[in-house]
Length: 462
Ligand SMILES: Cc1ncc(COP(=O)(O)O)c(C=O)c1O
Image (cartoon, rainbow, N blue to C red; front, side, top):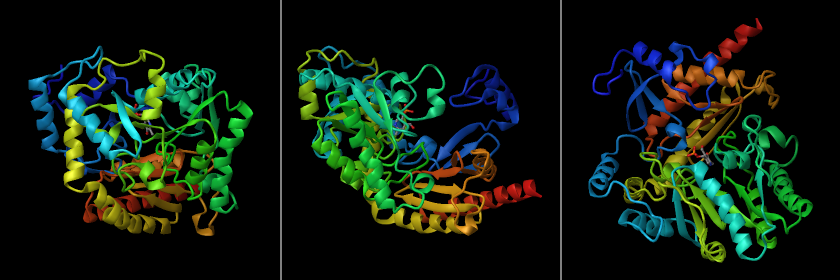
């Protein structure tokens, strides 16, 4: 039996893992014992493995460790709360100080009009809550037929039955009988893969107007809400053209539907503003949050809603929804300590006024690599498009989609950098506290991984 106080060798841990642990989003037939990296420590922007490697975490875990690793203030706040009150629920007319303080703080930080907060443990359950709130709201306003949620192809909203249905990931829909009824998907504003020769802003307007067309086709009396990430993250860091969000906002203002911003990745500073909605001037009726809310030190998620949505839902009497861990006091205390760090150290402002600019300049240099068709970033979210003919300016993709991206991801890992491959796009989302010289290390290691990948691709062709 593995004891945390006295770790055995890496090989023993790998074997024990494969004997008893089923990993998320993993093809178990394809992992060998040598493939597993055992992460044992972390500090700042680096994670450490059981073999002594220091790996620059260009993904901040899963887009979530915004304040970086090793912040003892968060650990201490959680420990204090564990001793004071490790758990109590927030059902049945009870509350506790950490959840009150967290809701009050979020009221100040979130976009104007978002005034009430319901908590859960993840982004997935936040988006389940969004669906239940949206449908209950319309029932409360005397329009119970408005149940359809419109989302986008290739969006990611989570992995529960309802949130994966909202998401537009075809691989997820192919397993387990998804999507649930009354979910409709429209196109994504993905310029590189889908705009062809169109002007990006014309393309953005065209994609936004698919929402209007969908409302007309489904019937406004059937549509409850539109949900979207300000910048699609797991779909491949799809940064919409400038024209996109103002047009979506216009449509949502003119039509009788709710607008939901899934801020699970963009929230808490990722774009250099507190929320993605601030960056794009989106006025959401609801926001979903998780990840950066606690910088992932403990699981917590939530939904923020306007007074209008809150009052509509309240028309239906008891809102029959909640989780044992809604507003968990220790997670709430950790989230508060995390938000204190983001605020008191000016981390969000620094991303907006300094780090994003430095990062953009250095990241864009990767666009000169012969394997890269485009290098783009917004705030500390970034993407590289890997293509076979970058030099000619062609956006044509590799035939076997995802294979070269997978090779590049493995080459990053082998060179002590975590980046993720989405098909043949490499995506990056480092902790917000990354320093300028650490950005240099990130870009150097990325370039090296690209070189190794390009060499392997060239070898295959000879
Ligand atoms: C935009 C977005 N929404 C929701 C989720 C789901 O969050 P969780 O994995 O905490 O359930 C994610 C996770 O990556 C996400 O990126």
